Picture 1 (cartoon, rainbow, N blue to C red):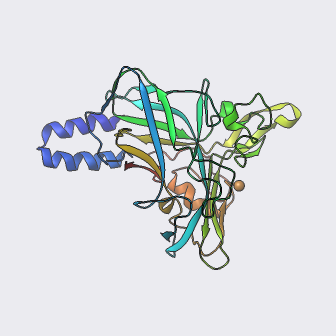
Picture 2 (cartoon, helix red, strand yellow; picture 1 turned 90 degrees about the vertical axis):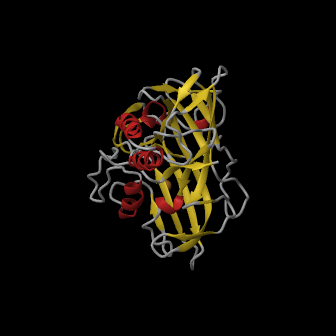
Picture 3 (cartoon, protein in one colour; picture 1 turned 135 degrees about the vertical axis):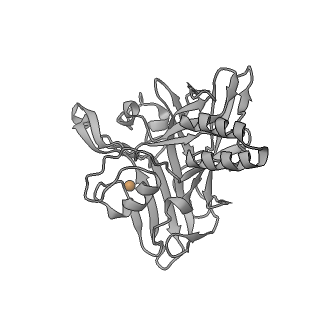
Length: 316
Ligand SMILES: [Cu+2]
C-alpha cells in the first residue's frame, strides 16, 4: 500500500489546493476513486455496521434495465441492459496504515455466504423491466460488520473463491448464492464453476446483436461429476478490485459498461465467454487487467502493475 504513505507525504509538503490536486492524481494512479474521498478516512461506530452499495453506469451516467444507453463501443452505439450480475468475494476494509480487516457478512441468504471465504451475488438487473428477462431480482448491497474504528478504503475480488467455485450447483448442501435453482444462469458447469460476471447488453443496431462478458475460470483440471475434485484452473480469471480511498457512506462501486466494452463494435455480436482463444475477450480482459492472449497462453492472473478500470467509485 505504497499509495497511502506517498499521499500523506505529498500533503505535508504542499499547500492545501495543490495537495488536493496531487492527492487526487495519486489516488487515481493507485486505482482509487477520488470522488469525495478523504485522506482521513471514515469511522465505523460501535455497531460495526458497514453497507457497500453497487451500481451500473455507462460513463458518468447511472443506468438500469429499460435505460436507453448511448455512446457505446467503437461505433458509439446504443444498447440496453439484458442481464447484469456479478459475484464479489472476500471484502476487506483498508486502514490508513495499509492493514486490512475482513468484512463479516451480516448473514447467509440467497445472495450471501459467509464461510472461510465469503461471496455475494450483486444483481443490477431484474426480471421483466425493459429488455431484462433473466430470472433475477435486484441486490445492490453487501452488508456486514468490522471492528469499530477508522478506515480509508475497501478491497474485494470479482469472482467466486476457488474453495467455493466448484461446489455442485444442484446440491441442496451448496450455499444458496451458488445454487442454480436459487440464482439461475450463473453456473457454467461443475468443472468450470460459476460465471463470475454476467454482463449482457442488447444493441439497438440492426438485428439487436448481443455484447456480453461471461467471466470465469477456464482450464480447470478434474472431473467432479465423476468424483475427481478440481485441483486447479489454468486461468483463474479473478479480478482484484481495490479502492484505496473509498467512503461507503458517500460512494458506491459502479460497473461502467462503457469502459468495459470500449473497444467492442456493438453493431455485431461480441460474445466473450472467457475462452482462452477468443479474440472477442481481448478488449474486456484488458480493461479488467487480466493476462489474456488470444493464442491461449494467457494466465488469467492480474497484470502486474496495472489496475482494472471497469469498476470505479462514484458519488451516491
Ligand atoms: Cu457464457
